[in-house]
Image 1 (cartoon, helix red, strand yellow):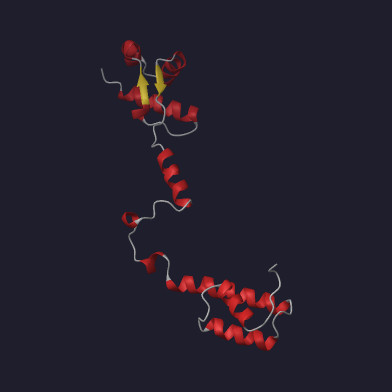
Image 2: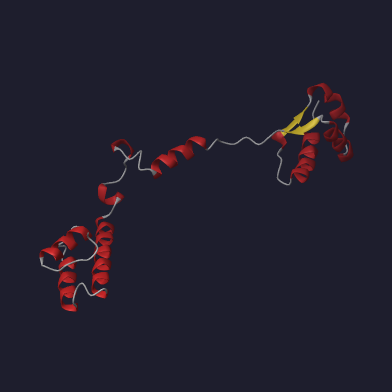
Amino acid sequence: MIISNQKRLAADILSRKEGRTVGIHRIWINPDYLDDVTNAVQKDDIRQLIEEGVIKAKPLVGNSRGRARKAEAQKAKGRRKGHGSRKGTANARNPKKHRWMKTIRAQRKALKEMRTDSTLTPSQYRLFYRKAKGGSYRSVAHLKSNIQLEGIDIGGEA
C-alpha cells in the first residue's frame, strides 16, 4: 500500500487550510482507515477524509525557550559572569577606551553644569576641564571633591 500520493495531496490541501506549509511528514493517517485512504485518488476524496478526521496534520514541534529566557533574565541581573563563562580578555569585554569615554563624558557634563549655574568661572572651568582631560579624576565624585578642596562651594549637599 503506497499512500505517498495521498499524503502529498493532503499536505497541499492542509497547507492552504492552515495558511502555512504542511509537509508530508506532518500528515497523520488513521491506521484503521488505510484502505479508504488507498482508494482515495482525487483531491475531493482526500478533502472528505480530512473532514471526517481520518487524515490530520500533526502539530508543529519546536524547541522550548523557557530555559533560554530564564538565563537571559539572570544575565540581565548580572549573574553568570564568573571565570568559567568568560571568553575574551577584560579589555575585550569592556575596552579601556569605552571606560575612558564613559568617565570623561560624565565629568565634562558635570563641569558644564557647574559652569552654567555659575558655580565655576570660565577660567576655573577651563582649569578643571584640562585636569579631567589629563586623567586626574577617577569619577565625578572625585572631581567634585577636588573642586571643594580648592575652596569652591558646590550647591546640592545639605
